[in-house]
Image 1: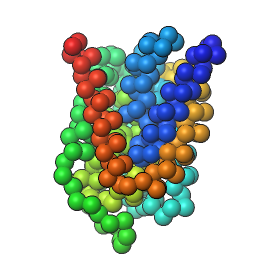
Image 2: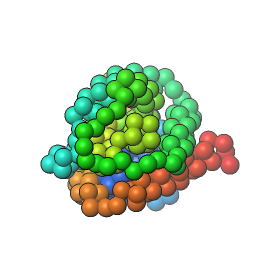
Image 3: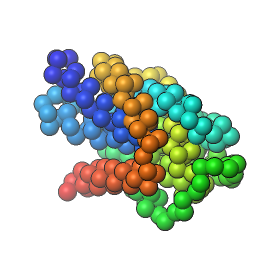
Length: 258
């Protein structure tokens, strides 16, 4: 790779990871479209859908790990929530990542578009603000089932699934926003273990661009996570909803050939 290519990939990885740490997602919802559309525009090698899912899977693994470490002393990582959803999403992501090798690039983009639309719909549903204080209660069985379904779909596109887990935790399980952001990073990290494993075994990870983006993620994700702890929770939800909506529109315009 040229110096220009390395620099541009680093910038893209940094931007995606910073936003992921800020809004509590693994970065796939940001980095997938960035890697799909931006490289051809700025004159560096374009990547196919399978390559992008491999890069994103590795990036999500490291960026969520960095984000969790940044949150570890804030008191917002809920062990009960992480364990109940983490195990289910891991199993689902392994199934999805192994199965993705048999899908065409067009099919992967459609699955990604469907996931993004679902996330947009859920983020704009009316929801009450839940206080961060007090004992956390939620439906463990429902949480496990939803996490498994998200894991399967997210494993296909190389994501950890946090862009769906966050609205599910906020709207369906009614988890407080800051606990959702912190715990979703931990759950997504567990999910990404399955996604990365599947992508590795099926040879879908291009190592050179992946290494550049991972390094950028390790720097940027903690910065975003630290900033998120000082921001208004409504603003964080709005940022995430807008980003997902823009991505969903762009993906579907391409899928439909508009």
